[in-house]
Image (cartoon, rainbow, N blue to C red):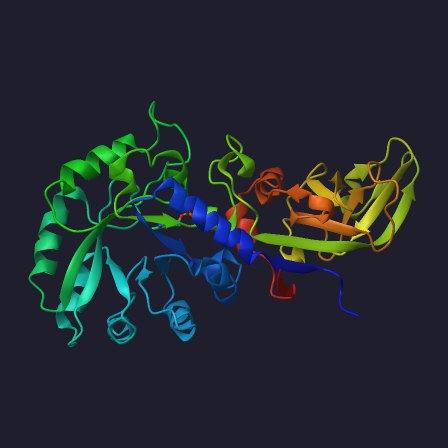
Length: 368
Ligand SMILES: Cc1ncc(COP(=O)(O)O)c(C=O)c1O
């Protein structure tokens, strides 16, 4: 009998979340961002829910090949472009659109032998300072690309660092928007600016909606601006459930400690459940006592240290719980219950993105 832990991917929720991105920006096209193996959901599984997207954005050529193997013939965008010159061969062969963020990538294109005109997304660094041409270098990069016979069409792209919060005394994107508008207003071509946070918070601005939005975390039901807003506020549904079962119960007496480092000590008689889930499954080890968790769909809290294969839960709110009771680490629980991945992430000092990407290979994954 395998350990009872499993992850479930909810393709109906992915489709719903994608529809939310469309509702937010009805006049834009939507990239479903499926990098990092669809944020841990699995490209093939996520594809079932996200195939209604106008395109898929990712980083790895291998993942692009997997999408083409699923018979996806629409746009695929490589968000970081090519990592070496021979990547361009695959771009030509698989008709991959690619970001160009530095001079070297233009050099590679200029040397690339192809009959297939490439669609490139010229990336501007509007303030994130990771990838892209600074505003003063954008025009000459655009002119270089425009002169290349290998280039069929040039679009423009940038990425926001702070779309998830009001910062810098403004809405978090105003400073980048000002830089972007000044540098690009008279350049032709389609544009893509908005990630999930911008798609949820800022798309009333047509300049932010632009031609393409890039829906990453929201496609999976993660909330980019939690805890200011939650999934219910944005109308998002969890794309993934991580669930397991109780494999033991213990009755602690006052003064009894629990687990490694005795970090939890019972002050009164306490019934606890032991869950088949630990950090080797991808559950965050830094989730302290008090991290929310569902037992038989009833909200409770974790107790003590998370160990490699097990964690403990307070059974006070669920008197009927016993060995075999269902435990929801995040996602959909029984009887219509829900536990947001962002809540769990926050209790562990991280973000939902990291948890969904970190589910361990040993956890069997099913499609709900
Ligand atoms: C260039 C780019 N666009 C879009 C996204 C999607 O972001 P999110 O998952 O916050 O929607 C990312 C994610 O890091 C990114 O790097």
